[in-house]
Length: 254
Length: 67
Image 1: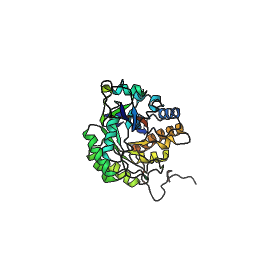
Image 2 (image 1 turned 90 degrees about the vertical axis):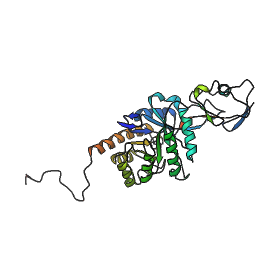
Image 3 (image 1 turned 180 degrees about the vertical axis):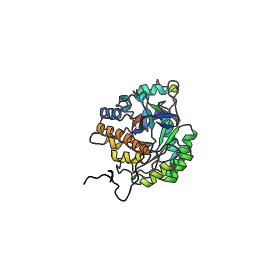
Image 4 (image 1 turned 180 degrees about the horizontal axis):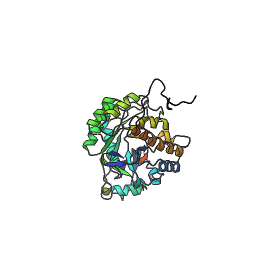
């Protein structure tokens, strides 16, 4: 069971809702993933076309814990405003703090992310900041009261997987709150690797929504999260330089 | 009456007096719409009574897919 703030989840897979080919595929992928947490963004409505279909109409949002993000924010102030707008929906009190500091890499601005986290914790939100794989920053965010830390495996949407497993494992090792690996996941292999390192959960979006078969990939990711977690709990054998026979050496009939 | 809605200057008839009236006028039916009125984020329950005046700045936002 994964506990974040006052919420408990059976599933350790959080799923984003962006860039699916269509709403039906998205719904099917979400169902198959068995996720309990969906992320989404807050955006201006097109007032000249207000009745355009919205993904929330397809999904039974009551079934999920909604995790809005503050994507689009470049400062703590903008992130706090977006968080308050999301909360005013009355549908959620969790917030993924996402303050981007670089348009090319979409890497988070550490200073503004920390400021926004401090402010939103004070305001009573359940705060999950998206951060880089900086070990000290992860600790500072936890000290600021973040309810979970979400280090990126690699840049958002890049599908590069875990580019710094050492830092990720150090973040996990020192963690006092759950660590949800967020961003950069490309394949089930990346998911199991992160879970085997001891991550408490995975947040991914593009790896499923932009896969050739999003529904199949959603199932693969669900299984990868479980396999990785089980492997972590089971405790892998240490790596050795030379072979160790699995079969007994005694009693060989020659 | 002139309003600035989501960055657009629009004119609404004098019968439009509240935030709820603006929603009806613009045919905004999404139950999840969130409203910011002159920089204040409104509780949903206040849309019906919240009076608007000439020159007000209103933002209608909603949830969209994202990661």
